[in-house]
Image: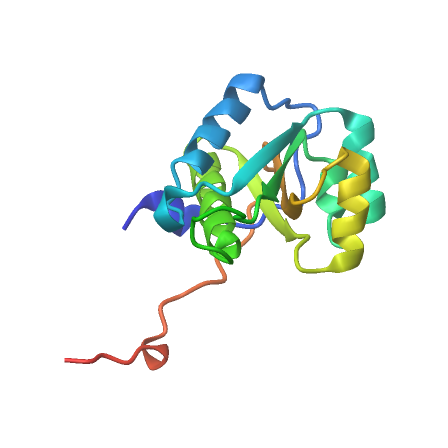
Length: 168
């Protein structure tokens, strides 16, 4: 199994004196854009944040994003629901795949992340639209805190055969 999958954790404390570079953010965003999407529709855009005041504002408007206090950066995944002849309503799966790619690539780079949902909570969507001037049809899907970990939480996931049905 890929070690990034085994080693991924939700990191809530970061070394605040360690920056995340534009090159590192570009690598994470490249990983995101390599994610699969329905009919290769790529229904996403991204906002990369390193400005301290903006990271602090995220903490103010999102009740579960306190980790942005010490994160060096954050990425907002913005869903762009399909309005043309592409398959509609698959943006949650597509944006989740892009988000997971960011989380796994970060591990391979020695960075930590924490995924905080915005969609489908309307009050969060409204606040993130205001903060980042996201115009419709764009939907703020999630925020990902990024930084150098200042903690090493234990793994919480495990293989549970009781949750598997084999059809043979």
